Image (tube, rainbow, N blue to C red; front, side, top):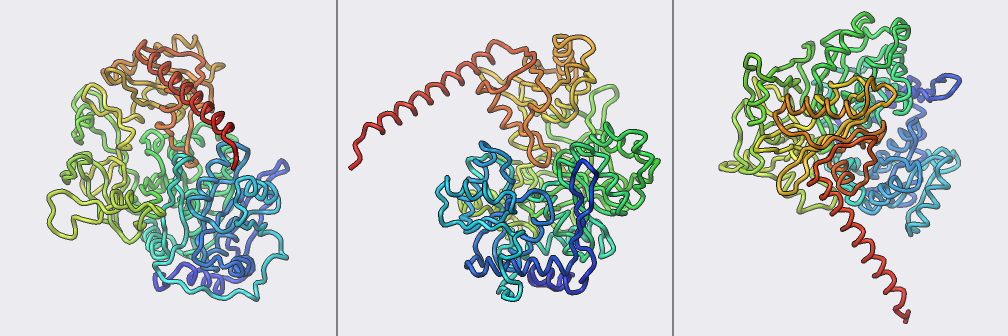
Length: 608
């Protein structure tokens, strides 16, 4: 499967081989029930040629094309068309409303220097109006579901090499400074081969899921991997899963799906919301690879999900904890095939010092889930400050090398030198240069990778290293009214560091009162971590910001907190922290006043 030079060549061959077999089935969400939509390989090929001809007529080859679609088959046709045209696809989130969503894609459009936007007929008028309002008068917009646009017979094969860009994968960072990971055809083919070797997929596999199509796992794992295999893909929209998690499992059951997954919170949601009656309708015996990645994997989630769904055929060895990121195209490590997830209990105090040590009697422990082994990458664990390699069993920043590692971020040479071309200190050979710094913390033990957290989110308090996800889990264990996976812990600084815990609560489920809940959180954090927890905010469900893959946006939550942008149902704050918020609010008001004065002054300058 690796004899192809580009992914375009591969898809053309797969389309010819599969002909009228379904390439994809999409289950739309509607009140009357889901009526499956089918897309055969021949139909995908013809639609891709038609749309690609439109792009070729507009000289889009080797240029960026922004894709803005709701979940559905039109996105797949458009993405494949970009491949056929030799264009560089740029998947983006469809703007649902004015405001942040439009701001995000405006930043992506500018950064990517897109020459066209592809969408559907329902969204083309709003997107065309947005392009005009933003001054993108030279960016064409095409509703690709209009059959009159383009001519499949006029399409011609593009001239591509393994080094040609396949797509830009924009990470879920800030709207003001979006970063597009540059993924070549060679990177994509290498990672798809790595995925296949790791999980043992074949043309007989049935892959898919519900993750957003512009997310790396949704795109590469659920759409491009079945195309790579020449297998069938089965998909649904994210909101379909979020409304009724049962629909995801029913899709797996109905279509005999073998491969697919999501972030850890998805498995939690299924445990909590799939009823006994729904359970009886499921058969999960075909599900051989339930990928669990994109956020820290929790041992308690694996245990709970496996126990809950074992009666309907889910096997422990089907759970597949893994590690990857957009900068490596997707997959880096995964547990060995046929092996159940490995959980390593370690001494909590030693972990705070950066060591994996055996538990000690009655002392606190932490459970780490192995992310498995790397078959196609070199991995090093490096001290992020001294850049010296750490020995096995010690925590440091995870550094990587491999054919799947992207060349960098789009047009960010300085950043790329720092992030994609790092050098291990003290080395003398080529093997010590050219490393990707992931920004993730972890340790290698017996050849397996244990990811412990994000470097930039580490809470350093009284000289100790605390992982925010550990504190968040502890908070959520204190009361059933607190939402699992719906909290953010971070530190703010005055004359010293202060721990802040923001946690969603369901007021109707509180057995006592919010004061008692907050006091319980403070007491438990103090007991469990031996640190003061003077700042607790209980907030409404939906307050905690997350990325499209479900990761807690702790940096954003910290920023909103300091700006006074969090409205609590109940809060306990230290005086010094209140002063920090007041100071930040005053500074923001001063900046707004200054900006207003500048604008007023500009309006008085005569136009010459």
